Image 1 (spheres, rainbow, N blue to C red):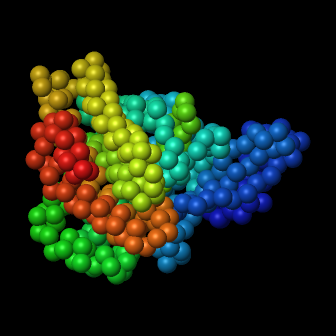
Image 2: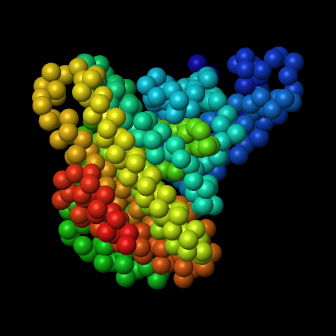
Image 3: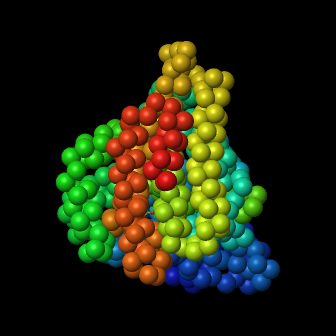
Length: 400
Ligand code: SR1
Ligand code: MG
């Protein structure tokens, strides 16, 4: 077995040249590193004709913090395996794995460089007509086909073991559910936000509702999640949508992925109050974001229920009305998890460019206050909604 070593561009190029056959032996290859995420190295290797692949390598620590935060290389195996499994049930929306080497924590992926990262595009006010239905399709299919509704019990349990991802889950457990609700050195917010943060951290009702969500995250192995569906994990163009980066994948509560996605759209919604100055333009983008959330939730529910009606293997879970009851709870969970995403991205360790890149600190502070309040109200009120219509009404009332 080859010993792990973190690659530089020359090593990444040599690896692709010698260990794969994507390029002709005589091809003149070029390679550069361009990763700007929190955790990994990302290289693009291309030839003179601009044929290219991406080589992604996990580092033994969190890149955004440094070697003081060691992190398992196992996440490369998890990520490649989630991509393969999700790709089997939703190929059109999952980035393709071309090659993997778990010992070197390497995954070679199709290059999506002709597409754009959704977060940057939304920040610039661009819209994508297929985004809602594509993400809904991905979330419904990947979660249904890896749930107890579909998998035989023994296979499901074996997969839960295969995808046990304790170190990456611990990051989410800390950053989503613990840090924002207590003092933590990792928290990051301006002094001017301290009164709101103190109020949040003293709000016992919020802490109780967050405890419910954390308990679900810890012990509801409902399906194989992506685990980190933020708008930086989605490539888009006007026809396609591709999910990347499921290194936080594990068997968890289905609503977590949907909630993370909605949460990121809402972070953008809040930021647009200060990003777009012309009112008609801002209204249009706000309408697009709200419509994307509503369409995604409705389509997710519809596809999931259709699969449950036509593909469920488990006899008891086919009981009349059970799938509807199950998915209603998933949607309540999603809006709750969405609230935790809004809060942790505002006062926790990992922020979003949508808000951070607002240059005027006074404007940014207003956006941060809105995101905090929205998150808090979703966490408190989502558990009391019965249907997706109630959840949608709740959201609209909070955005007014
Ligand atoms: C230390 S990792 C911080 C965040 O980046 C990832 O994309 C996840 O969202 C994680 O919470
Ligand atoms: Mg990532």
